[in-house]
Every structure is written in C-alpha cells, then in structure tokens.
Length: 148
Length: 137
Image (cartoon, rainbow over all chains, first blue to last red; front, side, top):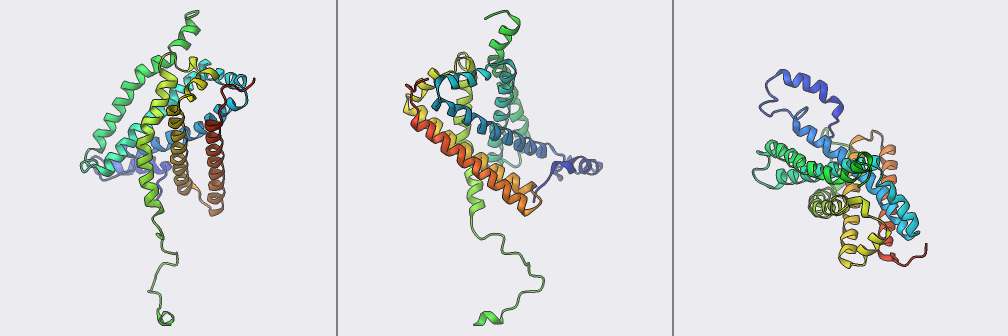
C-alpha cells in the first residue's frame, strides 16, 4: 500500500541493473516517484504554514497594533525568503496536482505523465523567476541599495 | 437459521471487509475538486499578497480592513479557509495512515490533526465574520 522513500535508493540500484526502468516497468526511483514525494513534502509544509497563518491573521480581532507587529516579521529579509519558498512549494503542488488530475481523468494522461512532469517543472521555473524578483526586489534594494 | 450452517471458506480473511462504505472514494474525488478550486483561490491569494504592487510590504491592519469591507473577498477567504483546511487535513490523514506503525500512534496523531483542524476552522470563520474595522487599539 504505502511506499516509503527510504527504500528507493537500494531499489533503484537493483532496478537499474536491468534495462526495465527505462522501458517504464519500475516505479521506484523513477521521476514519477520523486514527483509524488515532492507533492507530499510541499503539501505538509503548506498545511503547517496555514496553521500558523490563520493564528497570526486572527490577531486582527485583538488589536490593529498586535496584527501590524506580527505582520512586520513577514517583511524581514529572512521571512521574506521563506515566503519565496512557500510560493515555490504551493506552485509545485498546484501544477503537479493538475498533472495528477490529468493522469486520472484524461484518456492520454498516463501516456504523457512524464512529458507533463517536465512541462510542470518548466512552467514552475518560468513563473518563479519573475515571482522571486518581485517578492525580493524591495528587500534586496533596502539591504544593499541603501534605501528604496 | 440457515446462517448457522454456513462455514467460512478455507483461508478466508479474518479481517472485516476492507470496504464498508464509499468514504475513500468521496475523499479521492474531493481532493481533485477542491484542488482545482484551490489552484485559483490560493495562487490568486499569493499573487495579490506577495507579488502585486508592493507585495507583503503594503499589508497592515488597514489593508485587511479594506479587503474585508467587500463581501467578495470575505467569501474568497472563507472558501479558501474551508477548502484548504479540509484538503490539507485529508492529505495529512492519508500520510498518517501510511506511516504510523501502531494503531495507538495512528489514533492519537489523527485526534491531534482533527482538533487542530477544528480549532483553525472555527477560529478562522469567526475572525472573518466578526471582523471589526473600528476595533480600539
């Protein structure tokens, strides 16, 4: 039922000894398995962030000052960098989720699952380059540009 | 009466039938439907809050008050809260089922998960509905 990633390395070693992996027989160690691992990791991280985020937003019911103080931490350089990580994690989870839906419901989905993975990663890079720029521009200019 | 005459087939499994209802089917369908909605809701939220205009640097109490003055954004945030919490909670339930090795561990991890989900859902919903832009500092 469940497949844990810990066995992937040794499994990969023996699977790859045969040519079967290239012909698509084996799941272990395949990019398809790693896309599943990444889907789980990004999903769990996002869920934990959501827990904290609802709590910090709830401070609007305490006082404007309490909310403004906690939201200031979101604007510090280190947390700003974590936000880029969050957006990257959510974007991967969204794109790979669409891929999973297409594999499940599109008749040619299973056939094109691998090209769809590379497409997913391509879109991710294309979106993250300008996204990272706009998220960090102000922080970087304030740290190194001596003002804005 | 005739039941007393039936015998188990040889090597019949002792476990109860694995599938007594369609819960896991609905859960599978929910992940895909809510996932599609969340692509719009969450990516839209992240774009507005982190990228548009000055991103996170323009967010403060007044900014939140301005957004929640509109029923559209109230509904957006409420839908996002419920769908994300149920989608993420269901994902974590699957992960606990996969990796917990003992039934007691599995039970308590799920209880912790369900309590956390309930707290976040109730608190988040209350905050959206009872938000007061004129709250005193």
